[in-house]
Amino acid sequence: MNEPHTTIAYLMSRFPKLTETFVLYEMLELRRLGFRVVVIPLRLEKEGATHPEVREMEGDIFPAPLFSLRTIAINLKWLARHPVRYLSTVFRAATGTFGSLKFFAGALIYFPKAVVFADRVERLGITHVHAHFASYPAMTAWIMRRLCGVSYSFTAHGSDLYVDQRMLREKAHDAALAVTISDYNIRFIEERCGKEMADEFEVIHCGADLSAFKPREDLSARDRPFEIICVASFQASKGHRVLMDACAQLRERGVDFRCRLVGYGESEKEIKQRIEALQLTEKIIMEGAKPKPEVVRLLGEADVMVLTSIETGAGRKEGIPVALMEGMASGLPVVSSRLSGIPELVEDGISGLLFTPGNATEVADALERLANDPELRTRMGRAARATVEASFDLAKNAQTLAERIQFEIKA
Image (cartoon, rainbow, N blue to C red; front, side):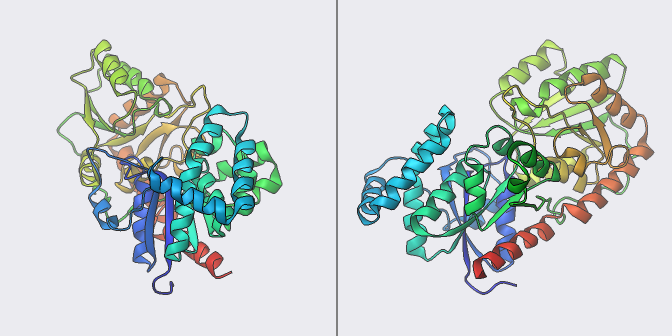
C-alpha cells in the first residue's frame, strides 16, 4: 500500500516509555507496512525496563536537548531566515496558551526544541509528522508546520484532551488529519468546543497485538487462588486505592484470591503503604515495571483483568486503556469503570463487568461473582477476545491510520 522509502516522523512526549506501548507498536506496524518511521521525542526517557522491540527503533531516534549551543544556533538561524514567521509563531503559541501556567510554560519551553525538529525534518526531507497526544506533542507539530510547512496529524487520547482544550481548534484546523480514540471523545469535543470542532476529528481506535496476546482455552479449571491482575501505572487516575479497598472486602467475604499489580509510578509508595495498612501483603503482589513478554506471561496466568479507573479532581481520566485491550486479547473477562470510552470496549455483562467509578463494593461484587462462576469467566473471556479481534486489532487499526496518513501525504 505504501511507496518505498516514505518517511514519517513520530512525535511523542517521552520515548521509550514503558506505559505507552501503543505508540511503540503502532510505529512498528507502520514499518511493517513499508513506511520508514523516525522518532522525535520531546524527552528521551531513561527507564530501567523497556520493551525488547525498542531496539528495532535504534538508529532512528532523534531527540533534542532542551538547551544547548546547537539548539541556540539553530533557533538563531531560523530567526534570521524567517523572522516574521518565527516571532509570530512564538507570539501565537504564547497567547494561545495564556491562562494556564502549565501549558504556557510548556509551549515556551518546548518551542526551541520544535525549531530543532523543524530544521531536522526539513534536512531529512520528511514530509509528514504524526503526534501522539493533543497537548505538547500536537503543539510541537503545529509549531513545526508553521515554521517549515511539514504536514502533520495527531491522535488525542484521554487526559491530554480532557484537562485543557487550549489551542485545540488551531491544532485540529491546521492538521492534515485529527484523530481521536473513542466516540466518547467526539461527544466530549462537541460539548466543550462545538459540533464544528468535533467534525474535524475522526475515530481510529488503538489496539492490541493479537499475535502476542493469546487466550487460554478454558478459564474454569484451577487449583489455586483466584488470580486477579491489574496492569496500570501508579497514578491517581488509575484508582488503585479503590482496588485495594475491594480486595479488603474480598478477604472479609472469604474469597481465596491473589492480586498482582504490574506497573510503576508516582503513587507506588502510597499504594504500598495502603496495602500494608489493610494487612493485604499476603494477598497483593506488587510486580513492578515489566516488559511486554512478562506482561504476556502474567496475563496468561490470570483469571480476570481489573482496572479501577477514576476521574481525578484535576479532570484526568482514561481514554480507552490499551491494557484492557491486551487483557481481553488474552481471553480474560475484565472488571472496569463505567468511565469515558471504556464502555465502547467492554460490553457490560457480555465481555466483562462495569461498575460505578470509585465504588469499591461494586468492584468486590463483580470480582466475587467471577471467582464463583468459572463458566461465566470462560464465556466472557471468549467474548472479550472476539471484541478485540473485531474492533481493537492493532494491525487493522494501524493500517487504517497508515492509509489515512498516506492519503493526506498525497493530497
